[in-house]
Amino acid sequence: MKEPLRITLLRHAVLLLFVAISIYPVLNVVSISLRPGDRLRSTDLAIIPPDWTFASYRALFTEQPFLRWLGNSLVVSGAVTATGVALASTAGYAFSRFRFIGRKATMLAILTTQMFPATMLLLPLYVLIAKLGLVDTWVGLMIFYTATALPFCVWQMKGFYDTIPASLEEAARIDGCSRAQAFWHVVLPLATPGLVITALFSFMTAWSEYIVAAQVMQDESMFTLPLGIKGFQASLSSQWGLYAAASILVSIPVVAVFLAFSRYLVNGLTVGSVKE
Amino acid sequence: MATVTIRDLHKRYAEGFHAVRGISLDIADGEFLVLVGPSGCGKSTTLRMVAGLEDVTSGTIRIGDRVVNDVAPGDRDIAMVFQNYALYPHLSVRENMAFGLKMRGTPRADIDRRVADAAAALSIEHLLARRPRELSGGQRQRVALGRAIVREPKVFLFDEPLSNLDAKLRVQMRAELARLHRRLGTTVIYVTHDQVEALTLGDRIVLMNHGTIQQVDAPLAIYRRPANRFVASFIGSPTMNLFSGMIRDGVFVVADEAARLPLGAEASGLTAGPAVLGIRPEDLVTEPNAVPFTTAEIEVAEQMGHETLAHVSVGGSSHVVRVPGDRAACPGDRLSLGVRPGGVHLFAADDEGRRLN
Image 1 (tube, rainbow over the protein chains, first blue to last red):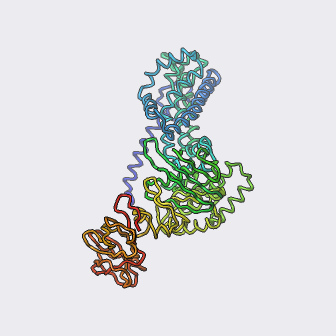
Image 2: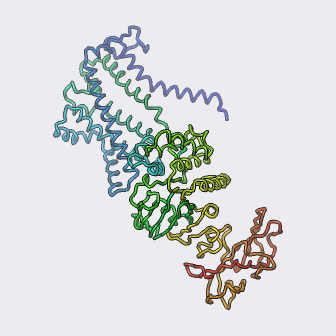
Image 3: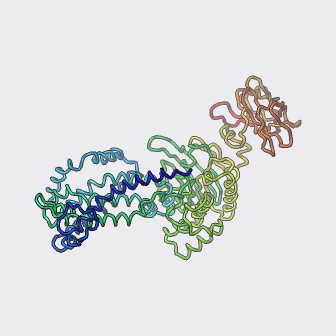
């Protein structure tokens, strides 16, 4: 049935309102990053100010250790993503396919860790990392992030494997695969959407995290991006231009990762394999 | 090609369920053996043990001369066709068929030739580039078959391969399977719950129930001389009519004296007492030369065209009579029923219900 025109218009008006609410802050940050100096408040409504300049962006790379922070963030996030995917894909498989003593208890224990707010884990984890001598190291931060991201990823992967019919692996084993080969050649390719979600989640956990990083990283040269950017915000004079420009640059890799991975985020990879 | 020998095979699951209880079978080289039985009878578990997908609790399985109990599925030189096809969805039809050969390191040229041959045999050459999701149910089943035959294994294992197809396609694929077996001559173990598939495809049928073998024989032998009441009621459609009653002075008397059947020569060696009389619907006839049995009124008449299945009530329970399609049979008609010579099956009245005559 065709919808009356006024309903269509109303629906679009509501949607436009929400779009405006979502993108206004982003546009505002873009605008601030292009203003000369540190003009946070401006009566001008133009998104691109008439006297726009890339000075803040230039300053980030020339006057600030922005590239150093970017490198730290990329190393930590990349490592957390790689370990997250490697561990969650194998642990999730074990929970999905094998029945072993303590399976349910372990799964519940993993879930329980998710019920504590991260700030509560801050102190014990910090003590742990300090005792291991890992303060001010990439590894210290990686352990912290992997530990917080992994529970969700393991559950997520377990749920994903549950949807892949066991008969596909059985067929592979009869076709000459070992269990590991069946996992590699048949299960893993079909679990791509799950792996992508795991990778994105791990990456995001590490990329934008501030509180933990602020404890583990004390030396400015080891700062990750959120820590570095926070440094622009001081009690007396905040460098809003740098702050805004850095915020825009920080979000670019995330958007790029999402765009690159989005085509894998489709359901129904197993369609046609088995008759339900 | 190879023989398969199963000795005293047991499967007990961790939770205690005893799925297969000591079965022994000798499957000849090139034989088409069908395992049939109701769901939960242990037929699929037996097949999966032969495939190596389930561990054997006790007993031995030999393929050829080799005991395969502890051999990995991929090293048993078998191929299996699953009920749900189990095609690799991320691979094309060609890659699906080539997968097993590739895993075994078969040379590329050899793989191409064998895939092409199998595809030609199954008329799926035009589908080779497609993904499983782009195929119909029948085409998927052909691809699953193709994946099995390119491997040129010693033994084919089929786990209810036709049960997901619609009725028309099933008949077509059944004939195709029979043709394929005649051409390849490979040993086949075929699991089904469909007795029509069992009767039409098998060189021999193994009828299972509760994890044990009830009878092993050629299809017609099982049909004509079921070893016990379970086999009698499982094989045949419509199922055999069973009447509880007594054998008394060489006559079978249906409970409540609802009908009597002189047993004649069949009675020799039988002791008087409770028993169950079995008569197949086609042996319960209205012909004059039959041994007179009873008269009964038609309650329901199912017209199939070539025949009419007349449901009649004898001794308070419902039974089926096959009436030739050219004869009128309407509800309310009274039939005077006799039993064709040789159509009498007598079973013990106990739980085991073994054959008496």
